Length: 286
Image 1 (cartoon, rainbow, N blue to C red):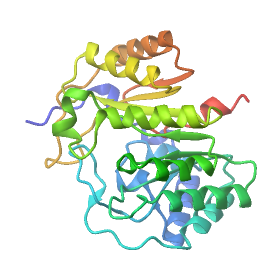
Image 2 (cartoon, one colour):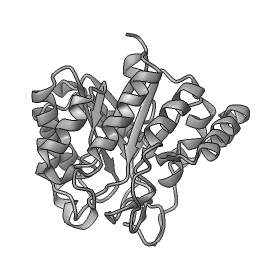
Image 3 (cartoon, rainbow, N blue to C red):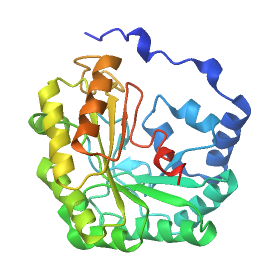
């Protein structure tokens, strides 16, 4: 049975700027680039596009994994586009961005999981727009330390890797990933490159308890995670995992307060929060 969305999950379309929305969409279509905003059917894409922001998704649109929560298409992925790093850099320049978020499908078919392609994209961005802050939302590279080091060496400002859910639900929600492997990845980034900010995110509403969420937050912080997002899971289709609960805004505020009490330097927690939602906020006052 599909749960009816509460009032706090209704989007006010009148709040957006149609001209900028059209401009960003046109740019994406013209370049042939992919955005996770569109591929994952993010509820915030109209707001972000209207503000001239987007999260670019590299390495194609076909994911080699088939997680139960994700709307990215699962299938056989093609060869990476060698021109894609420069295309992304040009798009970021055209939009006049000061903060760029780059993510990808998971490419378990590639020897390095796409790490070198990430690095090339970061370097292309830094070369074309030297003042841009770059956040990369990376896959786990199947625990490949050498692949992770390739991304670290490209020196993005933020490395984000989402833990997604509580440990108990990994087998059903994220069966091709590993809870401890995610924590280890974050820990390795922080130990190897202390100047790179570490970030992760969790979805709620999948059947977890508040105490289980708090345990994830403690685990993340203990492994060197500095920035956190907490958002409501929304089922992309009937074929995906069902929403068990629509978490109240008050509970999201409680998660935010708890995370801050642990020492996270930046926390975004709310029904519409996603990994890259308002990602530039921690940098705006620098």
